Image (cartoon, rainbow, N blue to C red; front, side, top):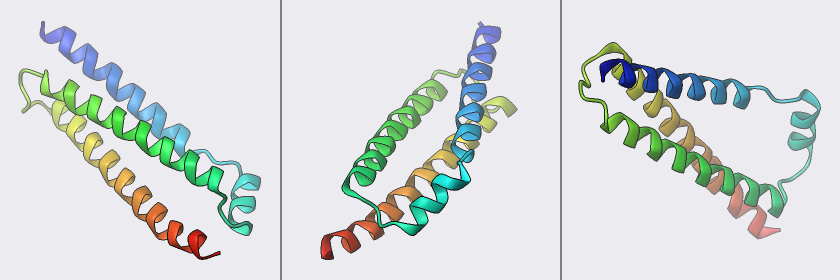
Length: 107
């Protein structure tokens, strides 16, 4: 039973780290275009959809952690740190989106 939990957590951590790595890879040309042009309604919609998806995944991570029998293991602690990191990232993205939205409404 413990090995199944450890394996499940290892898979979840791998997926989390993989997603984090993909989120950090941004094409330079795409970044330059985003910085030089104002955000469109489609960009805002895409960002909001991404945030909603991220919230769902984060809630699933929390649910998975709740099924771990012993939450004092280093692996469970690492999983909790990953959850905290994703929560901070989502909060930051939501703040940026809220700051960006009033600017677009004025135009």
